[in-house]
Length: 428
Ligand SMILES: CC(=O)N[C@H]1[C@@H](OP(=O)(O)OP(=O)(O)OC[C@H]2O[C@@H](n3ccc(=O)[nH]c3=O)[C@H](O)[C@@H]2O)O[C@H](CO)[C@@H](O)[C@@H]1O
Ligand SMILES: C=C(OP(=O)(O)O)C(=O)O
Image 1: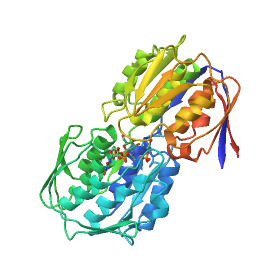
Image 2: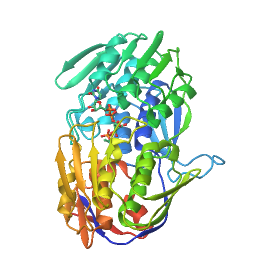
Image 3: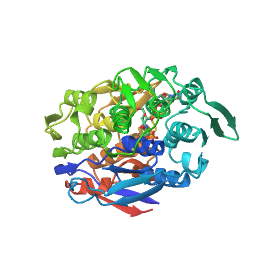
Image 4: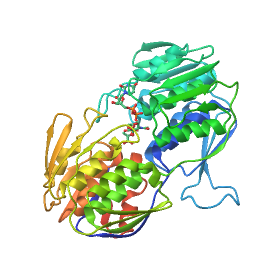
């Protein structure tokens, strides 16, 4: 197992390039199940989750390979294209071993049902940040005519052909909306998803499906309407930049100080985070796809509540907590999306932060300095928050169990070291 070692206290200076979004790449890979022929996905980061999802697709009979872009296609991406071919499906199962390490595996359910009328997918179970059931996915598919059975920890689903349906989501679930959009794309008739998720990753998947021939309206609004078509075709598709990775590096300047240009970002995908970070006193300038961040002096505490897009993303809550741990004054950070997403609090306190949890809120009293210590990561974004705190802490911080971090950040230590952080990876 690897860990990260950080010697904190060095301001950052330079440029960081943002990779493709994990949470956009995974549904795009699932969408490749919907049609035979070769899909070429560009800007797919080489992350642990992407490799796990490739293994899952290979188990279903999909051929997956990395391949340099064809000549003339441009070389602006840091990774070779991911080429997927689902012409012949030989399996219909997402096994527990894969689903337990990556909940997004549930995204194969809708496409498999749409394509072949059968799927067997392990129930994801609870994880470090909450129970995370998939009842909205299942109820929506049932409304579309699928017959579902829960047996031995698996959802077994069958449908001769899915039918359009009126579906209301109790909360705007991101992967729920994605799964149902994919299932509805080739269903008979029209599907209406009310209280749909509006995250950029959902919109991007919808646009990919449109490019494949799907008829979808209302992307980015609360009501998404999908008119089923008889067949879809493969496409070449570029994954959007990772807004959570961009937000994380912006906040690295918040903890470590300095001046960094974040390149290849989509600032328009970060409305709440940029507003909130500006309110702390962090200087942020946007120039097209570049975000310039500078910190001069101590930041101010702010209150924040996580909300579905365009609200403040839950996937940046832990990182903001590292920032306000060092800010002047008190901050109240309220988590409304997941019931147990404060696993970083005890570890930040080990570094000298002053945070207490009251129900769904973390009350943070800013301290003047953090001191390096060994800490343990418990989930993906908690790990990122500990790295950010370590960049500011005096002395040495070791962050163990970084396999969580490797699920969602491509070469984080290299990107940070390139802007002057003293950070390296070691075997535990
Ligand atoms: C791969 C991916 O894109 N993951 C993201 C996705 O996760 P994911 O799609 O799993 O998150 P959801 O939007 O579904 O979850 C939102 C809330 O709804 C609840 N819920 C969801 C589905 C369901 O059937 N029943 C139910 O009760 C969840 O437990 C949670 O409390 O959106 C989350 C919220 O922005 C992000 O933190 C994750 O990074
Ligand atoms: C919670 C996350 O991912 P997942 O939904 O894959 O667990 C995340 O990206 O922060």
